[in-house]
Amino acid sequence: MNNKEIQHALDYHEATKHSEVSIMTSRHYLDYDNRPMPFKTYLEQPRYPLTNNFPSPNLESITSIVDVKQSANSSPTQSEKSVSVMDISEILFFAAGITRVLRYSYGTYFMRAASATGALYPIESYVVCGDITPDLKAGVYHFGPAEFSLTQLRSGDYRHALASTALAEREYDTILTSPLSIIFSSFAWRNAWKYQARSYRHWFWDCGVIVANLLATTASMKLPTKLIMGYVDDMVDRLLCLETLKEASIVIAPIGIGSCPKSDSKGNNNIQKEIAELPIPKIVPLSQRGEIDYPDIWNMNQNSKLFDREEVESWIDIQKNSTLDYQQAKTKHNRSSISKQQLEQRNQNLGIENNAEPILDRKGMSKDMGTPSTMTIGEVILRRGSTRRFDTHSSIPLSTLYSILDSSTRGVPMDVFTNEGLMSSVIDTYFIANNVVGLEPGAYFFNRNLKAFDLLKRNASRQISGYLCLGQSLFSDASAVIFLMADLHKVLDDLGNRGYRVAQLEAGIIAGKIYLSSYAHSIGASGTTFFDDAVTEFLAPHAANKSTMIAMGVGVPGYKARPGTVLPVRLTREELVNLHT
Image (cartoon, rainbow, N blue to C red; front, side, top):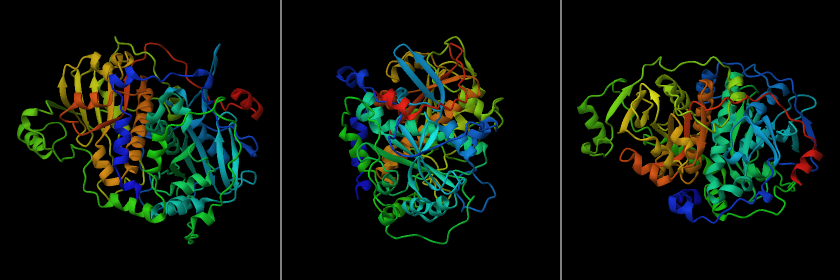
């Protein structure tokens, strides 16, 4: 099976690395006359308008970001919480709705609740639900943020069919007992227009920040939510009527787990009979002059697919038998200090010579150092933007940086991360501190199990953090620049090529939480790409075997931005068609 042939993922990652040479020798240019439109517009399907009168999620923001108890690691139990059209409107708006409309002489930009690389918004959202109201019947729907409506693709209750694509017992029941699942996909050309073959990485970054909003919103609404990565790709894509080599599913998110009675039926053994193949619905083309094909994107996606139920079961079972410890610093040592002997023993366990001095010092954090926010999660999502200028004269407190990192790395409710195995995360967090009060400037590893910052290099200059992020001054000016990294060889050995999706998506979700946590503390944040090998080399030997998934800068903005608003834009289908033409 292709998923186990991990050279595909290793080759893709290597081929899409950034370096000074690759940047300088690239002949790629942006054809703005062929820029993809930001909305998927169906021409013939019926639409159901969502309501404008939804509330804002009102739980304290840091609590919402941290709350992973909603994840269904235990079997679903019956809940009295039902889901209404108002709930669905609230969830979709705060995850992927339009919060700002910016009008310029050269065009109009519809900015959304979650960030997107290049403001290109390649992620689409689909809803698979049972009967919600007499008007919103069971079916498969596409969420249109511009119309703020659901476009019907299939009529009938397809939750059983969706559950059959993720046959692992726990996930089967998780989907069946949920009133709805949201499935996120990527419309590949929308991001490849700018980022070419590397844009496959962006599928998961851009999806991850939306998922971070989704999880925080459903936590506030007390709707248990889980992320399912183990499913039969082609059947889910068929269910959503996606066009092959144009758009593909990324993750399934059942919402309100336990709200519906558990079904005793295990369904049809032939998923293809449950999900009839329909003609691809007519949509407005994304670009007037067509699309450029990037085969590396679809080769990587094809080679990380799961093709049948048996492969799904096998993939999920791999994790339960894993003995890999993805958090290098997992130990029972004292949270605030470590002796020289303990440090030497730890380095030996990591296979690092002690004279390499991977850890120069350790700064332990107290349990109560993380501070709550004065804002609700709804307020934070509306305030969130992507900072375009940091104030180099303003610093951030150590407690703020710790709170951001701690609240962002408490876990992700993903099917591959369960209590039955050791694997709870595949991401390690490193950062360069430029201007943090109470923290020596330098490069650090965030030891999340010990709640400590491990100093790896002293006196790292601002120029280094900017250089590593493609030489962008924005990331020289940031108070701290965070690198989310994974040991890809370990991840792929355990999870096959699909592990590449897991690592990139988890990093994207953590990045989304960093966005939210930063704005919850009234500072700013911005995501970025990077020189792949240069980051690893700079953070070696501690990070010698790791690859950067995504980077984030945090700091005090050098300007005051206006917050977004609850703005369910109501463009008509005709207006959307005109936008495309």
